[in-house]
Length: 367
Image 1 (cartoon, rainbow, N blue to C red):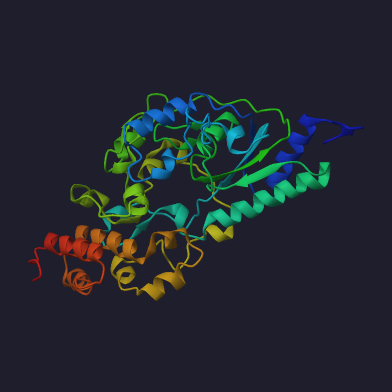
Image 2: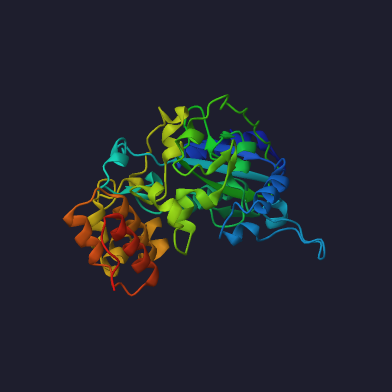
């Protein structure tokens, strides 16, 4: 129990109360770290220098500038939020029992959407919960300086979570925990409170290469190194232009994100299910047919995916991704007719991917 002795705060006691309050608010784990992220800047700079970030120019933003003396806000939390002394990292599971895609990869007519995106967008939910946790701290000790983040700023979430003892960085670069696997979201509270840091945990990947071996595009170019330009999540979500033709067949029926490296990981065999109803699949996205999704009009896309992270890619990229998946599907009159229905789409990018898909089914180029 947190205790104040006059103006003196029992920071260890407050820390444990914050952990308890976080669990009461629905988080599955709370960790605490300082502001030092070991090797973060060197690792980030090497990754950027290799070009592994692709079109994600925002990853190179907020870099250190020797000319002005500016520090790297991504790797130095106290530079991003001056006065930060400790960081509270919260973890929330998102795996649902109904989102079982085992075997669906081979059902080429079915759409595969990354498990995290099947329900409501997690950003608002986590941010609201983190704000409630921050408010609970205020109610206990009075005003203090803080900022809440949920994938909303240049924050190195995995590195901070690792420093806070919530897991280790797996060879696929995601955070891993022996009891929780990797199917969870992360969020942070940067604060000026001198909360004692938790101890980091050691790496437990050992000699396992399951995630590396499972990657359809060989995007995990070495243990702990991901070339985002090859990653299906990047290609189907972050990439705004055409998907490279050489990679399209490797996407299979994955139309938004990819979980293959997580599915293959032994630590996810017993990953716990979420307690959040908002993460349950909506509009039967866990069992949808590609043809049915391809038939949506833009109004259907906007209405049905309101409050979904998928909506952020927009209707054009939605059709682009599904066209590729239909090109990889088992050939049938139904698939070919669906593709032909979009052959004259106003978007040149959609038309190009549809034409590629039709040629995959032996159809001659139009015109």
